[in-house]
Length: 299
Image (cartoon, rainbow, N blue to C red; front, side):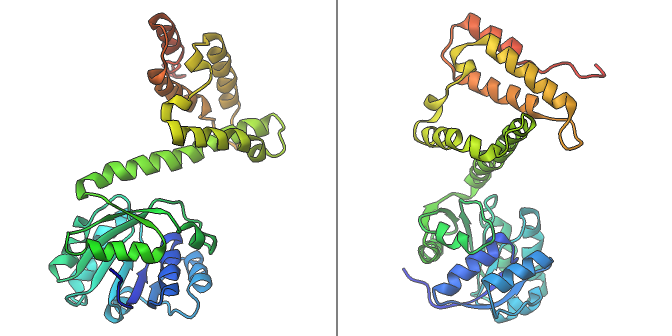
């Protein structure tokens, strides 16, 4: 199924909205307007959506056949309710949001007003630049909607170059948690490792880590926990102890004016690794004891 050429209004010209708007524009859709509040969003709209007028929400709603709502999760419900309360949304208008957390229930006020509602979430991290356009090709995209409108969501995904995955309404929170846990916490983990190496004088910590991390990521994506290596998996209690001592010293001296948190993260992730390790119970218990949280200063 292909979608007819639509007049699309982009509400939220952030990293996601501006990029998806540009991708849909390249497929022949007209972008009727964009809502951008911050200077960064305005600059992004100027770069990715040149010539598109920056308008307020009511103006965009009035002139658009499809609304692309690309706003933070907590703003989505109030935005949908606010648009519905204005009475501006005509029956038959298509409303698509890009939140990973929500399905279509968050858009129920607009559905009751006669809009067709869909959820479409690309499973990728956006930079808000033209580089994202090529990254959409082959990107998995979770779609949620009624059986009537799912083919429309599938057609939009095809136009964006992605691969559609149908997701039930009730599965969205766990779906989004899994992606956020993987992507966001990976950034924290890598940043902690970069900070530690920088403290040792490594000039380019990112470049130093790249071969190791790319290999580990590839293996974990292919084989899951079977890719785990290291002292916890081997039961090397002495090495785990040395790691904890070094990281606790690092945290105590502080990083960029704040107390470090790498030791806490190491303990939490090592405990998770321990549950996946095949070790004799005596060795497992020894390492589990090492990984207990240290007492707080005021304890």
